[in-house]
Image (cartoon, rainbow, N blue to C red; front, side, top):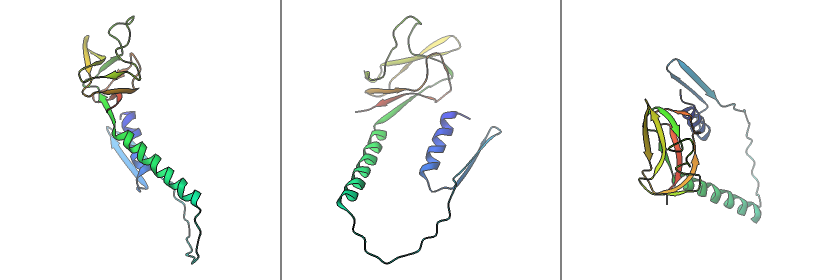
Length: 153
């Protein structure tokens, strides 16, 4: 089972109300459970004065969450179309095709994935800016494994 898939499952699990999750694939079984506490709530009738600073703090936290969701919506993943070895440059002594912070256009070559001695250039399918290079140079990659995160405009 792919490590990135496991990380995504855990992230989704943590954000949900599910208390237990079990996944089995190719003889590998993963079980994740949340530890819950029994909290007894006693209703009370009382009036509370909420300070202005508490309201402003809550508003700031909400704006931060919305901003993070907008940023996630603007991120595009480039995936490997084949199984092979990831290379950031066309040759060991050459400069990398792209670096973090580079602005790219649709069709720009981002990397090479070598499969069976064939060098396959991986091109961007969007315009944007390189935010993260997920795979290290010379590392093996799987089909559909994320390689780059690109911030689209």
